[in-house]
Length: 466
Image (cartoon, rainbow, N blue to C red; front, side):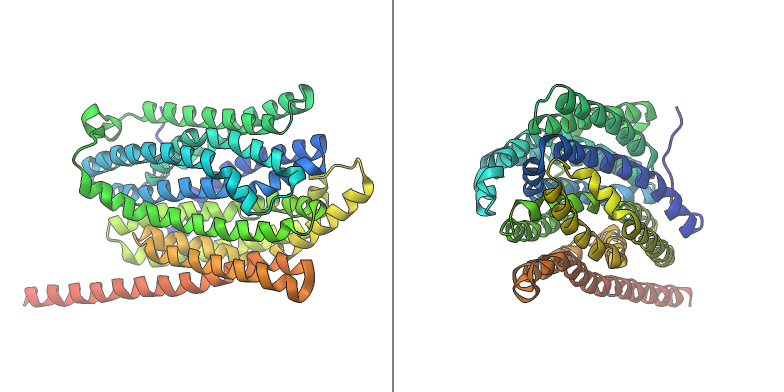
């Protein structure tokens, strides 16, 4: 069986980063594809109210997913650093401890999701005519939290060792399963909004099983975990370090999601048509940032491995290369969305009532146009945030999440008062700007600390040579 692991401490940074990010992009596209199919099937087959219900649940669902991704990405930073340093035994222990912590957290999140989903949706002011559908969708999705945690844990283990292909193949298979089940459950059998959530959960099970299969085939001492490795006692120092990496990232994502929920509560006041249009564009948000998240995952691995190996010069050159590639990509994607956005958005909206269709499409495209024009700001955010995290600092990126929350919330609350409903479309852009300001300052701060250490190290070497 071919191994897809990749050591990123040697070779030209630009080529390494782009080649590693490319399969991640395709994997993210597959993931977005089955999310888009969910929305298309719900919107076209079940109507505007069902589309609005899924939209009202969007940020609550994203908050849970963001917590899971934040925790597992934090664990992956430590794995990437140990892989880059060549410390196999430490890597093995970190994988075991990370898996145990992920299992405990998934149980806590599963219980919290079921208990607090109703009061949370009520707090957001979800309209009564879509509350039932939104709650049903979220309760089914949240039942799959352990599966989502498992997939993200496995994918992060693989990516930390330079394997971007296995998550791609897993997501490709999962996408095909999800699309087929969506069509059968909703269009053929007519099961309704819960069926779309069930199809997603089954697809996630398939992706997790594929990753497990690949890891088993890879073999090696790193994956030969025993019952002793999963002991609840001992390893407290390592587990504490893992939590110090993972929890700030989870908190960062949770805070961002809370800001999104506040935006959603403002959107809810504009009525079902506006909610549906806003939802249609939010579903394209994933396509807008599909390459950005891929560059982000790449930078965590690239920077993590090179930091572990002490190759600080490669970190800085890789940062420059990643920013150039990311900015060029964002311009191309933004231009494509401006040119073909209306045609894509129309796929999500039912044409049963043409007046509703036209009004919903108008709202959706206005929002899409704003995000497309300012997309480079988002791409800088993902690259710089992930680079700082890969250096082992998750506290400063957490502060960027707080800045993102503040800017998104203030914009959502006050811009509509000044310029009407169009003001809500700029909440995302101002949030990106706020995060970028903190992140660029954080990167400069961390690099200066490195430079000081390097100068001190050289002086000590010169003194010892004398």
